[in-house]
Image (cartoon, rainbow, N blue to C red; front, side, top):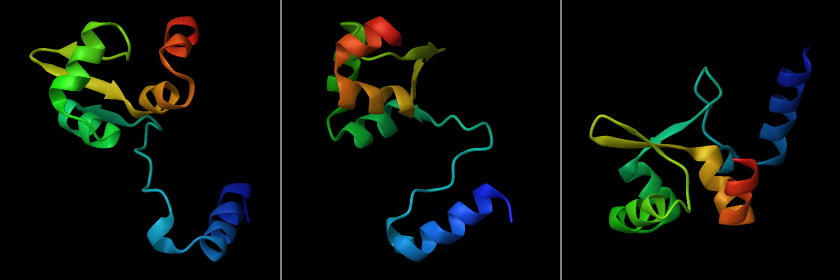
Length: 88
């Protein structure tokens, strides 16, 4: 059994299925819309856009829509905006 399968099997025994993380997209990168980012951060879409415009959190505009890397939002929450500017 490969390491990944072994880990997944043991994780399911330790953590109830309802508490495990959702499957990651095949690319391994989870991209969020503005609505999803606001929901994840538990704030309004206007607040998220304001943070983006101040350069506090990273995002890309594609056409008229914003996209966010979930990992970048997690790093922002864990380390603050300084981490994004230095390592993002």
